[in-house]
Length: 322
Length: 294
Image (cartoon, rainbow over all chains, first blue to last red; front, side, top):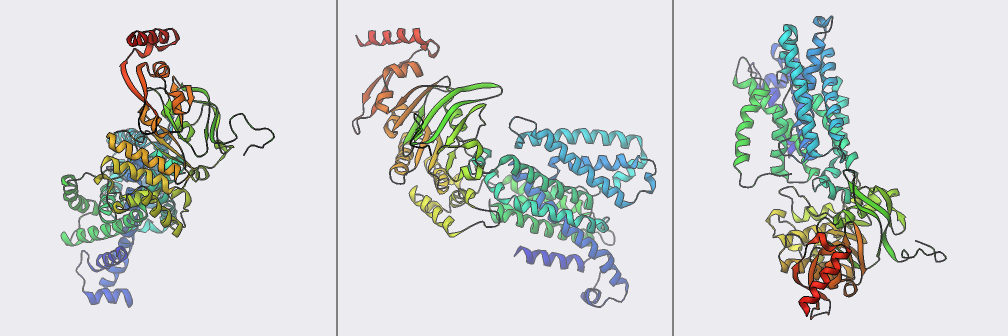
């Protein structure tokens, strides 16, 4: 079912764009391209961004599910471990380097990914440096501290450098359109992240009953937590590199999926991947159609779609706990 | 297993034993160098005042708390040398305040008890289904399998948790205050279940209980703790005495025989000062009691 929704979303994403195209043009572009304007729009513009939305949606959905499951905190999102300020700091710091003006997008992506992963590692290290190891509470606190610190330094740098501000503005736009070309480089890492997430499903189900119960069920809590956080770090860093901050999607997806499939992570993790992919594909397509001939970045559309959903969640009779 | 030629003094029938076990946290020692053994096929209750270290002891025995010194042996094998998975196939623990996500059904909860017997590439098998069905039936909640945990009464919820660790199919079960927050009828209900698990299903049970009379009623062995040490240990009728209740709880009480099974039953007369219950104070306390008797 979920797979069908993803395929339908994918088709919609290809069929609708800033330039209206007919069904014949779509078929033409897919099966018999000859370099017409519509062919180029679909094959060169829509196809990469569609794949990018698919990948980013999968990453953000699974990362959000991991973030909430590992911390048992229903308001955790993929930004939990400080990836956004971490990536932003690496990018603005990189723009201050000599020769930064000619730096390629690939090099900047390297900075973004490295910054995001470094921030995660720092948060995990700080959050684990207690006598209990990494607990949901220490992780959230460490994430907040590292985010505040990195955010402060980012503000300081962009206040003093216009070049840094311009670079940051490009990378902070929540959009799947601009950086689709980076996807092939990140696919192996995304696959690693997804495999780690799947391996974390059993421990997540046990950890949902509390650390003590998980331990008594034979789960090595420290190992399960590091494994899950590593998966979260890789997936979230990949998503921020490919599409900028879309934490809201990572917050929304697991809530919606829990409502659909229940409390079992054997369904939640794949469900979050499929739901996240569909959500990004559909909101990105909507952003292209609503504001023709221009377009709205997917981050903006997500916020508009997501806010009412959260108001609905908050008004539900039974509050969600994890 | 220990050999017949050199049997350890109290280890020969012990399923679980602690040797010089020292437990604590925050650099503080709560249980100093404790030796204890739990015989196979018995129900043991640990009693004692708040903060005496009884829950800490249970957590230490159940490897939820790493010992500062000493060791715990399960069937003669050192717990520290066993994988958590192997341990979880032989020993289950019900923590004091377990946690469940909203929307989790009774059936899903009980299924999670199978975790130590599953691999990530093989999530579910027929033996799992059988064990889950048996656990639900044994705790009499099979008809609630599809009900979310939060819709249950306190007594039903506790039975669901016990069902979960029952599905783990371990010989040894550790229960940390399984009757907390339950009214008397449901406390008895849970303890009757514990007795059935022991007598009909051969499970060895070690639990922490607050209610001394219920502990005496449903246990083969009582362990009374105070300040991290074992003050008395033995059959309920030997351990539950007015002197011990004064020494351990600072409670002046009479002990009578309850009418159904002739087990000791505590009738409190009034609480003394817990601090004055050291050796001289205890004598004074007993004097007060004898004056009251006179």
